[in-house]
Length: 277
Ligand SMILES: [Zn+2]
Image 1 (spheres, rainbow, N blue to C red):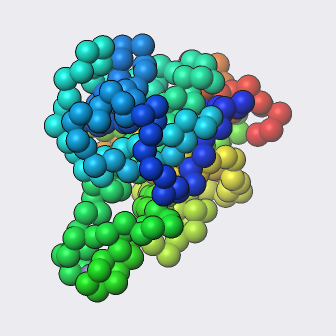
Image 2: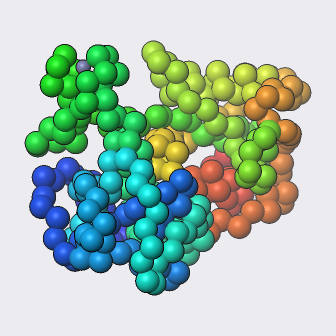
């Protein structure tokens, strides 16, 4: 998965660090990120002429990365262009994954800052805390910490078949597993049962946790679960959410897992480990 970057290491800890010439600057515009065609980011030395206010985001293998706290105009700089952040889906090596995991982590941090410029309670401009990643209001003292939206991904198993689906009305047209946000006051396991009932009208049992995945591109935390069908296997899809859903045997799972998404890993794990289901 994209977070499997060993022997590389992403250090997410907040630091109140002065920016230096060789630090990287991650500039987003729309859904694109400024880099060279062969995936190299500009350094502070190269972009300081633009005068952006920059914020420390994270470090990978000791190299620091900075972001802006709100969207800035695209820059024109020799050797650099704007690449769709969806290019992370082409990552094939641990080096690629380490790079794109860093970019997506920067994206998540940048999106959070851009949506926390003003106090949601009283409207005053927020100020950054000195020692942690937190924005606070000098007027009403409200504190805002980074927001991560937790979601469940569900591998619903019916003997030697798994339920695969396709989303309605999304750019991604490939197979997916059922997924959804965890509601306030709900356990992840309750979210699994609720999402399956809502999206395909089926009951589940034997819900068991598999693995998690930070999914910075949508500011989510994905929690993967397998569960077994409980009772009737007739699917009734929610057409607002899904264009189709069906039961697929191991030989019908024809996806190529290049090691990015939890969804593909879970489909592949089901296909390759019949002894565990
Ligand atoms: Zn306030």
